[in-house]
Length: 194
Image (tube, rainbow, N blue to C red; front, side, top):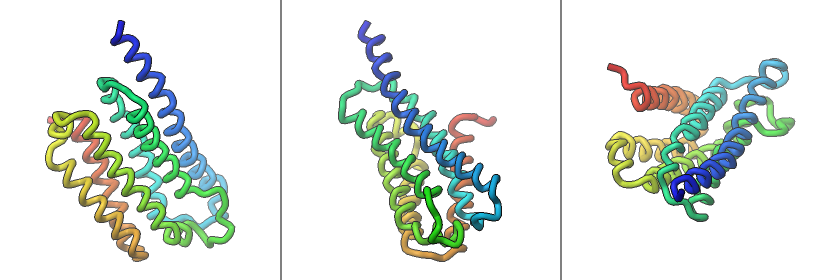
């Protein structure tokens, strides 16, 4: 009986987390559809589109990764932490696709002007991810290996660099390398290729 109550409680929490993440995905997909519907209204910026792709994949990965939380004993602090973590993804989606861009010439101008917000929030999600991993237990963290710890540290440093520089080549290279790495990480973690 206690296991059933725990599972029901977790499912209840998961619904709210799913709603928040779903709102983030909705924001991203709506933004993409606006670009398709009105391609000449705002100038597209490839780096911006790469970060949109990264965020879509990251939200999907987060959603999947949170299945491991079913094994935990839940309390309000853990619930609030995981929900705030999900809120970060929604905020990132809103930064990538704002309600109004009248004062900007296109997504390049907008993205570069909001890079401190975007990469600051992204760095906070990395810290939250590490805390989330610790919450799942030391064995869980160890199972991810040294690569996970190095990846989080390197990404936080890269986010700080991206906040400081407006260099378009740096931003494009960062987004490209991170997208390729993230897809590689997911493939290696979930599709054990022989």
